[in-house]
Length: 169
Image (tube, rainbow, N blue to C red; front, side):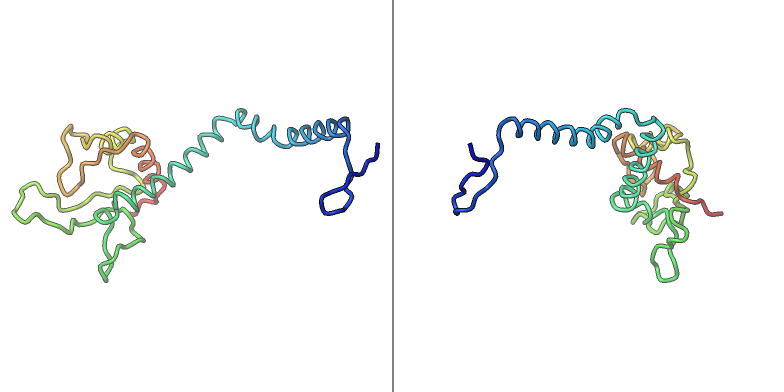
């Protein structure tokens, strides 16, 4: 039996017998397994510190997205510069509230507190606020603070991001 076979276009191609094909398949599988097994099976052996670190990096990125792109916290909690833009050098460090109700309100806040760096309550209290709208006093925050109803994981991500900021004096 010849080791060559004719192809449609008239060229001759080498032919592989079943035994050679089986050996080649086993070798390719062994090479594939040798390179992929550490990646697949090693993930289960990561230390909990490494897994927590990867999760916290993801939480911080998600928290930044939620704070800056969804909740727009900087609009109230960041002072303005001389041109009226947000002063990024004092990001989330507290600021005068720029809006007032059309009709006077005796309990309208004048200052939005600092939330960047050291949030004004414990992690648990901040998460409770962001998931329920209830502050440490047991009452809802006053407007213009929005009564957020975030998921627990989103609230934890927001707190993780806020804690990465450097508080200003």
